[in-house]
Length: 282
Image 1 (tube, rainbow, N blue to C red):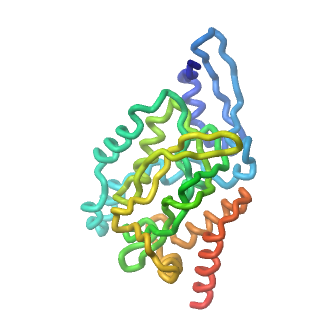
Image 2 (image 1 turned 90 degrees about the horizontal axis):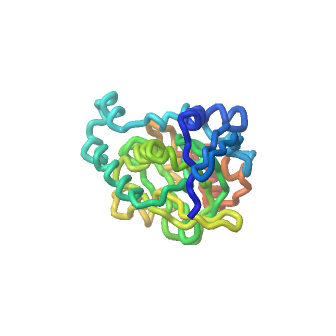
Image 3 (image 1 turned 30 degrees about the horizontal axis):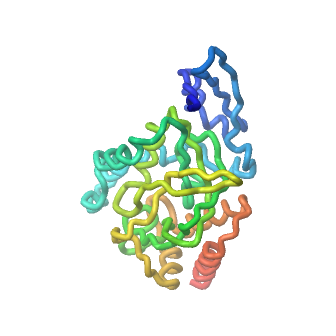
């Protein structure tokens, strides 16, 4: 069995300095191999396979989501106290995360992004790949009334991964040595309330197939509306605005990412055009 690399303090500091790699094209890691006394310096460019994304993805350490914590938000915004009964506690998030990750082999993990994680993952990654997930598709069925991109009086719309014909997105590789810290950041963002379910799905890039962590639609959640109409989708896209911005900006960012990758998504393009037309007519 191949032994996994062990990173020393210098390496972890290099990983923690990741935003500089976004600006200067690479991060230098000191790789110490456990099966020999040899050490070597390697320059790893996370964007080597997709250089067109270099200016499209936000610095993880500068991301709002890296320190996002819903409990802190509610403390600062007492008018949102009504959300407390709807969100997962920190203990529930940690239990869910550890149960899913506990038995994984000691190796890097891939995270499949199909929405805002594509341009703002907030976690440190060593590689990004254009990828395809079969048997699932991106569907705009998340009616947001919990303050992210909409409220009860002006619902927003966001994407969820649901059973379907296939989905193109991005795969981010998290080094094994920092999985604990980086997945904790991911769960604080994606597992705020009953909406998504974390699970591993099959993803492909080139001739490679991997198991990737992602968050799929929870059809037991009130916010997931599987039978949403087209008119409702367009209306929520044009009216939805919350603490994280507007629903329309969220969709526009997805389309922008697809343009950089050369991905054709007719559903996203149609929804954006329809929402922009409605905005122009209003």
